[in-house]
Each structure stands twice: as C-alpha cells, then as structure tokens.
Amino acid sequence: MGNNIMYFHRYLIGKIRRIYFMALPESKMDYKKSRIYYTTADTAAQTIVQLVGGTFLATLMSYCGISDANIGVITSLVSLAALSQIFLINFFKRLKKYKFLVCTTALQRILFSVIYLIPLLAISNSKKGIIIVLLYFIGQIFVQIGNPASQDWIASLVPSRLRGKYFSIKDSVAVFVVSTTMLLAGMILDYFKSRDIITGFIIISIMIFILTMLNFICLSMMKEPRMSYVNKEGKEMHGRLAKRAKDSEIAASISNQGTLYELKDAFGNRKFRKAFTVQFLYTFAFYICTPFNSSYQIKDLSLPYTFIMLVAFIANLYRIYLTPKLGRLADKFGMAKLLRYTLLALGFNFLVMGLTVPGNAYPMHILGTFLASTAWAFAGIGLFGIQLDFYRNDKRMIWLTITSSICGVLGFFVSILGGTILDFLQKCNLMMFGRKIYAQQILNIIGFLLLLLTVYYIRFYIETEKIDANRSDGMMDV
Image 1 (cartoon, rainbow, N blue to C red):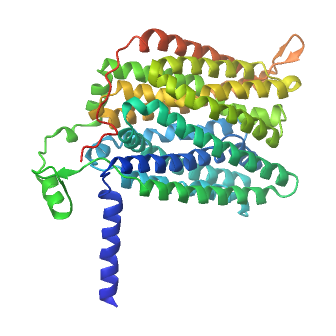
Image 2: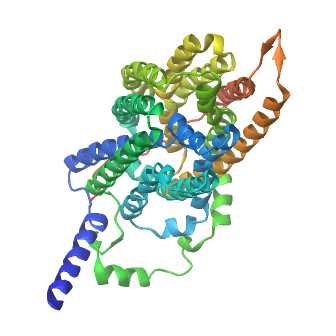
C-alpha cells in the first residue's frame, strides 16, 4: 500500500512537471493549437469578468444593501488588486516558466462563484457585504498576479505581423460567447427578480464555476515557448540538472536588482513613458465615470435587465463583424491610428451617457451601446498592441507588470474620487432649466473630455514614433 502511494505520488509529480514545466511547442501546429486554446480560455475569462461586474454584481450588492457610490468603488477593487503585481516583480524575474503561475492564479476565479452564494447565509447584510468584498478582492488579486504573465505568454505565441488579425479574431469569438451568455444571464435575473432572486444568484454561481474550470483546462493544454536552463547543446534541462544550473547562477545578476531599479529603468525609457502615458490617460477617463454607470442604468434610468442584455447582444453582433476588419487595418496602418479612432468612439459613448435621462433612456442607451461596441471592437487590442510595440522584448513581462500595477492603483483612487463627487452631487439635487441633473451625467462628461485629451496625445506623440518590430514572437526557436 505504501509503495502504491509512493508510485502514484511520483507519477502525479511527473505529470504536473510535464504539463506545466516541459510543454515546449515543437511545431507550427503546436503554436496554432496553443493560440486556439488561449482563445477559448480567454473567452471563458472574459465571460466571468462580465458575470462578476456591471449590472450583475451591482444587483448582488444592492440586494445586500450596499450604496451606489460604494458599489462603484468596490467594482474598482480589480484596479487596486493590481498593486500586488509590483511587489512581486523580483519573483516574476526569477521565473523561467509562466504556465504554472498563470494556471494556478486562473483557478482562483472559483472565489467569484462563491460570492453569489453569500446571500444564502443567515447573517446580517453588513456581514454579507464584507464577505463579498473580501472574496472579490482576494480573487482579483490572484487574477491580477497572473495577468502580465499570461499577456507575455500569448504575445510570445503570436507573430508580430499577425497580432491585429489574431487578437481581433480572438475578441470576436469572445464577444459572441460573452454577449450570448449575458443575454441568458440577464433573462435569468429578470425572471427570478420578482420571484426568488437568490435562485438566480445560484445559477450565476454555477455558470462561473463551469467557466473557471474551462479556463483552467484550456490554459493547461497550451504550450509555452520559454526555456528555463539549457545545456551546451541548447537543450532544456530539468530536475537535478536544472537545480545545479540554478544554484550556479551569479548572485549579482540582474535578476537580483530590486523593484526601484526596475521602475527607474522603465521610466528612463522614452518609449515606455509614451505607452504608459496613453494607458494612464485612458485609465483616468474610464474610472472617473464607468464604475457608476451600471447602478445608474438600473436604479435611476429603470432599464430592464433583458432590454440591456438584448441591446448589448445585437450591438455585439455588430462588434463581431467590425473587429476582424479593424484588426486587419491595424496590421496595415498601425495600432496607434486605429486606437485613436476607437477611443474617440468611446468618448462619444461617455458623451451620450452624459446626456441620458429617464425620459430618453431607451433610445440613448441604444445609441451609446453601439458607440461602445465600436470602441471596444479595438480599444483593448490597441492599448495592448501599443505596449507590445513600444516595450523591449527582454523587459516586456516586467514593464507590463509596472504598467498594470500603477494604472490599476490609479483606477482605484480615481473611482474613489468619482464616488466622492457622486455622493456630493447627489446631495446637491442639481437642476438645469427646470430639469434634474444626475451626478452620473457630470462624471461621464468629465470622462469624455479626458478621452479627447488621450486622442490628442496618441495623434501627436504616439503615431509619430517609429516602431521596432519584434521578429522572435510566434517563431520556432526550439
């Protein structure tokens, strides 16, 4: 019996090592399959993001008695969680492989499934709110820790000349699945809202659990084109050989340089500063208003879940059609130019929200949703693409981490600022020409003006910069 346990333990350890530390791509087909697996995994992850954000999380928190301003701040905890990345820079630099880290952190999305079961507990609403916030924040910390590694991982699997095409196709698939799932989830919540909304929360929880396992399995099936320690023949070493190689590394190597050194090195690079500035401006514009729009739609505008999800579903079909076309245009004309136009569309979406009141909510919501779909057809791809274009390949993981963590903290504090402004304006009971002015309208106008500034910066400081294409990504080197 003891021997059987020992053999099973060794078999299990060997299997884990083979899957997570020895999964090198050996052919172009391995690269292709890995990109397909990543598309599936990312689709599941994006669906989870929508199920634990926006109207769904706002509904859960409202049920537990959390105020509008606090809902906006709590949903921005995802940004504050990114701060954890910067404290782990030295740990990231020592990693030779990213796959195990990415898969382990991805599995922690199960915590998001648990938060929808909190209403089942026989405790006060204040305690439910505390537990929801804790689990949500812990889950977001794990997700944020794995994000830079997963971004660098997929970047290494996609040739630079095909980034626009691949990421646009990936996003099209994700948008279709997400919008379909959101429509179904919205109908579920609408159905159970007047009956027993806790049953709706349980169904959402089950959906998140299934998506988490799909995300984890697909990431585990991917190959990773990163070698740890190699011998004189250029072949990767494992086990004791790898341990000896690790022990023989020079103690004063660059991997032992601290976080402050990496921050100074990053901000000392002109291209890093430019790409970082774009992300900084976008983050400020996004978090000053977006976290508060979901509760505005539900409470003040009184829009039904099914209507919101149906409009989003139709608009996302349009986005699916548009995204691949924009991706091909980006490969041809550059990421920056396409990003400029799509961020302008996002700015007009904020402007429409700033002009939306209960009397015109239905048509304005439709217009705003289609503007948002136009923007999100490429905005996320473009922001990431500029970073890949501007960041040095040998520093990409670290610089992605720095950008994500700093802008994440910025997003959180901007959302707190937005929440403070929201509380103040709601108490003022603003009126203009005899009509009530809602606080969210003012916040969206501010977001619109900030995005105009971002568009200006991209046009005159990013598009004028020469791009050095990375020739190693997505190419066979083993």
